Amino acid sequence: MNNISLQQIMSARFRTSTHADNLTKMLMEVLGLSTKAAVARLAIGRSLSLGALADEQVDAKGLEIPASSLFTQDDVAIWVGLILTHARTFGIAATEGMDTFRSQLRQHWHRGAGLLYEDWKSSNEDFDNFVGTLVKRRADLPDRSGYPQEVTRERSEEASPTDQSSQLTRALSEIGINAEVKGVIHGPRLSRYRVALRDVNQIDKLRRGLEPLALAMSLQQHMPTLSAGDEARIVVIDVPRPRSTWKNAGKRELLDALRAIPVNGDDLIVCPGVDVVGKPLQFDLRTSPHLLVGGATGQGKSVCVHALLISLIAKHSPASLRLALLDPKQVEFGVYANSRFLWQDKIAIGGGACRTMVEDLVTEMDDRYRRLSELGVNNIAEAARKGMHVPYIVACIDELADLVIQDRDLEQKIVRLAQLARAAGIHLILATQRPDAKTFSGLLRSNVPARIALTVQKSTESQIILDEPGAEDLLGAGDMIVKLSGTETLRAHGYFLSLADVESVMRK
Ligand SMILES: Nc1ncnc2c1ncn2[C@@H]1O[C@H](COP(=O)(O)OP(=O)(O)OP(=O)(O)O)[C@@H](O)[C@H]1O
Image 1 (cartoon, rainbow, N blue to C red):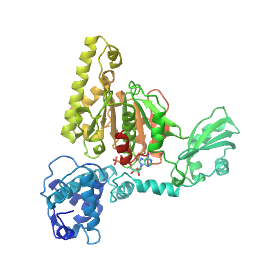
Image 2 (cartoon, rainbow, N blue to C red):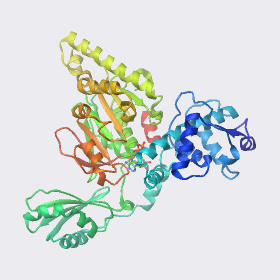
Image 3 (cartoon, rainbow, N blue to C red):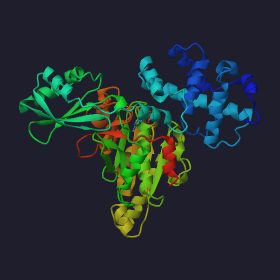
Image 4 (cartoon, helix red, strand yellow):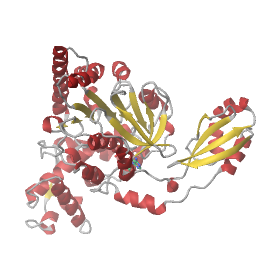
């Protein structure tokens, strides 16, 4: 910081935009905070933990606030350091002057207030839910390299899973079921018990008794799951373990899983995570042509989307794959800003740019269809054999709700892509933290066959994403249920990737 001193900063005054000012006042009221500065600090922290700021004009018409309210002598250096580091990380050249600092602070406050408002809404305007969301995000602890502290904490506290066979047998007998545990496999987060029932007719009783079983095993609010075993009397019970025993799969495991898949520019294999016993899960977007990723805020949707995109990037070159990234909320895709894989060489940020990109995708699809029909073929794989080479386009919309709720016409265009784009080599990944019927309406649902549900708050939300309940009982932190067309649902745990991990794979 050559041109400004901390003293200068402490004697300056700062403003945010009119919009953020209004949101700040509203948040003060609903959260019971007595100063604007308290909201501003939360908002700035919330924004600092994310990628590049949007390239947009943010007015400076909010009411002025003195730096001495915003910072204290003890923490001003930290805040200034964080804001400048964020700016440098995301390529703001002139970070040294007071004007740049003011502008960065204003934009973080503006972006963060919008996100806090979203958090408030998606927490059903419930204070405890909202605080829970903030804690999960560690909103006031900026995280440049993408969650290293959390990983360290989880690793250092990691305990070995213990065999709970005898507790399980006892709990089963408490609910009136005679059974014997025949074996156990400790997966990354759940232990899988192979259980022989004395009487095959007890399966229904067990199915109805899962809640009391959870209580008898002191699993708190987490539920065991039941599935059929390899013989008539055998059932499989997956029992969630304490977090301290989890073994999260991360970048190394994802890259190992990808290495095991032969390179083939013809498929679109994505690897969201590992299954209950730790086996890599993968599927091909060509056969599950469009995917919805839904879950409550802070449950791992962004990390999951990164794993999907990284799977694709790792197995392709820009000649065989392009990513159309649409980010109405202006927060998620900054890390891909310089990627050679970007369709149209840019990320669509904000509502207007996203609308234009969806329209461009429809035009591209129509154009590809025209060329396919000239060649007398039905899809791009056949077209390639006749010399027409076009890359797959995987279009990823970060917050579907933000695009479709205000613009039903745009929704129609997305539906059209979902109905037709597959043959033209265009596939959709739609992400939402608001899984409701308005966001994921009937026509879209029937044309988006692949679904990944992260933890949701209510079973009705699980129903929207998966057409069945279950995601409300997931364990958070990237725990997921995957449903592909024509297959049974699968429980999985997402690969845990930091932004630094994503960056390192992209440098390949
Ligand atoms: N696969 C995972 N393994 C372990 N922890 C995870 C995993 N995925 C996410 N988390 C934890 O959950 C936090 C939130 O993840 P993420 O940012 O992906 O949530 P989100 O659902 O995208 O939130 P939002 O919708 O508000 O953007 C991460 O910071 C991390 O601590």
